[in-house]
Image (cartoon, rainbow, N blue to C red):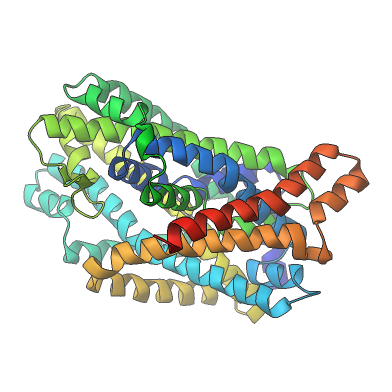
Length: 449
Ligand code: PHE
């Protein structure tokens, strides 16, 4: 088993391999499905501004802290946090690791449902091309039956990859497919911006209404979205950090991951928000009382309409687009699944195979519960994870790096050793500013409102 783990760890001995895998984790449905939906629901441009501020001030430092802890400890998140808190409160460290693990399973429970929608939408145009119109319509219409079929398919796909370890194939895949996704995004943006109605969407997205910037609902959504998009707070990035050689120059790697992730989210907004307004211009009801209708399912109506306006070529574009989204979702699921799997293998003596199937089964049960009580649970699970659990885990990471680990500020100590004054500044930023800022935002926004 040890051998098994060290094989997995070896995967990221190259920095680029790590960046690709971590970017693969970060870039996913959060960017292309959740970000535009959240932005449209929260005033467009104002959301974008707050999102960027939160990303720079809090999310990037939190991503750094998470990867740093994993990289220093070279262990799965439960053991890593336990070790980091060894001197003062190992049990609290371990519990925090376990809470993160529950967060990873919560993430998987709704994420695999949405990823299933993507899969279904990628198949629908193909069946239409083959003349199976009824089947195609079924695949593109949301229903409980469709969820019951595609969520398990997606979980199985993820398990098939995970049980072999985070292999080179997926790294190479994300490296090749992400550029295609990027090119498609650009192409679609150019196309949509020429349609009537797009200009209004562009204005909503790019011209912030500053009066909305202090809206607590907006701030909390932007913060949750930023943490979710960078995959922070459930341990996925921590375990990837642990699979990389110790003490690499993490700062640059973290910045590249964040830049890739934020860039893709920005582009997705540039596509989807104008697309919503084009649809509205064409007579479709998009907003109800300022909120997007349909619990996040709206883009699945809007995008196919957009693709079908391109003629038969559009069917092909639609299929490839949703296929790429499914793959982007897969690389994100892999990092989350790796958290409980890594823990069971490393700490509990499971074989990789057994751990993968057990976790997949747990995720399946959780997903089925959400599908059964969709209206109540779907939004609630997302909200609890992104606006409560992830920010609190980030706060814990800041406290660990800034205060708890070796009873002091690990980064500042290191700056003395390495004679790097900027590292001291960075250490103090993580030690004082981040936890205070996060607490203020959290208490004011999440609790008092
Ligand atoms: N960051 C991923 C996305 O944007 C989601 C994710 C969250 C992945 C938490 C892993 C852990 O789609």
